[in-house]
Image (cartoon, rainbow, N blue to C red; front, side):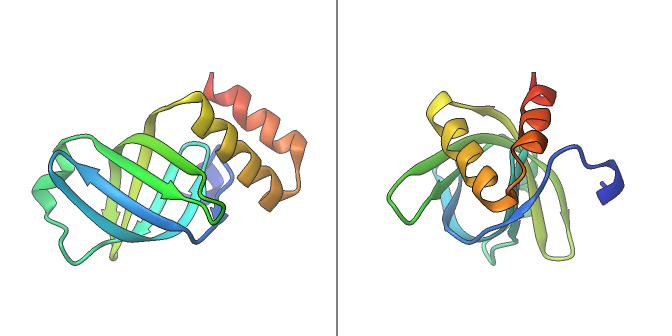
Length: 118
């Protein structure tokens, strides 16, 4: 998806991140995060056949707070994996909202994006 079509601000961010699917899990390098998903570097253990099933993404912030997203693979290209959030619990969305607000500095933009999720 091109940047012009993006409805959600992406924030470059680095935090301990795991991608999980059934009994498989792997740490990944988080590139950026938005209210709608995450972009990560493709791990060496990645297999294309994994893409059909749902994933969980777990992001642990430096203060020990965790953001948990249920996701689906939206795209895999050029060594990057884009995961689209399909479900996020109230605590996680609250932490994510705060993280994005602190990193964008634009509360009005953030509020518009939150409304777009509904």
